[in-house]
Length: 165
Image (tube, rainbow, N blue to C red; front, side):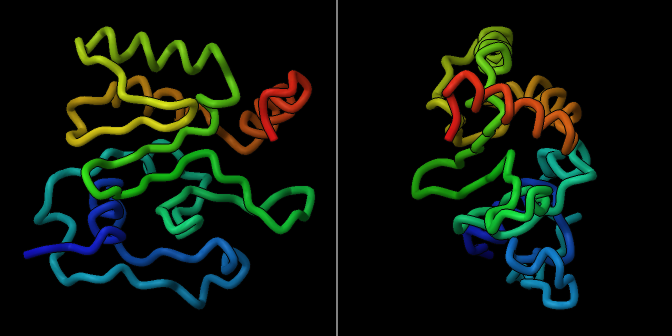
């Protein structure tokens, strides 16, 4: 049985139930249902992103599964530290904290070395075909520490350095 990209990404992320578009963060009564009828429990275990980031709301943003919170400054765009996308030949995990912090980027690269895998990554993107080929424990540790306050502080530091738009 096949799954669409949204369903496949949601299963990989360990989500059940429904997703909200980021524009509907203040309107939880309008969920976007994940297509498919196979229970998530019947599929492979998820990555655990939602469990690592309980404060953040899994939503659809930029055409990807994203973990968001409304901008505390009242901006139109939400805070989006993590997104997960299904590409044609691979999955992409976008980690804005890795883009904003050289220390976090280095920790992820060291995590790849620890599992003996050459990193396939850009500034914020980790590309992979199997979850076993990314340093998931390092990534989840990074995400567990990514509270709203920690993310806002990291963003402010990156803006001050001129390394983030």
